[in-house]
Image (tube, rainbow, N blue to C red):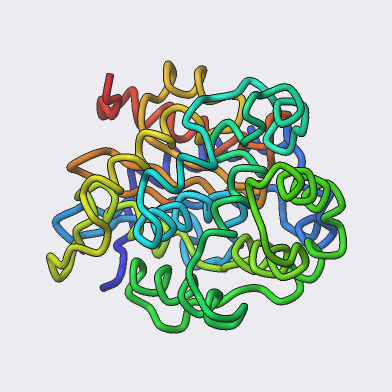
Length: 309
């Protein structure tokens, strides 16, 4: 299925594109610094299997932290809620996504939630597989299944760039290993995590994943249950409380939908029982969220009454 261009949507994209000038692209991962800060595109995938777009919706970008939601869904299927949340908490944090401070002060010393880096690393370590290759293949196949595209893969350059600059994430891993939150080989985990973050797709494909979550785990084309209902619900709840880093509270008030952002400029949005939304706008605000992407969602939420509250 292909998306159809939408004039109203394109008008809004054109209106907010200039906001990108106020932000900057992520540069702490060198490969991400090559992005064009003026890029802005959106696809909205209806749960009834229709799609509209504006901007260059087929331009690929890496998922980065958006992948945290997808791998959480897989880990919950692999291990169950008791195991996962025995090692990772369920509480929002006002700290930056890569902070180590709460790990040091929390008792027991486990990550506060799966959407911060420490929690996401712990979740990735839970994926079942006899080898690193098998774990990665299961992660990739799960994402391909959600998108319904067997050609989805990862950006080798971005993964390599992230692996080489991942000192803080390594520190988080060693801290958690000391406190029995994770076990196993840290470098294997780092390779899996950086590949996971470098999984690449476009707005249309991201919006399709959103439509699966909007339909409580059902494939919008086939009606197949790709994610169990209770797991889809858990993931959407985390997106509301923690999905937009430490701007999640403000985003809930201004937009009011489950959403997850990534530092490449992607945003996965969900209007429950209605739409999946995929956005790409690599110019970021100070919290690490797409500056034009958030404004786009704010306008759409007000215009079409998206808020779940």
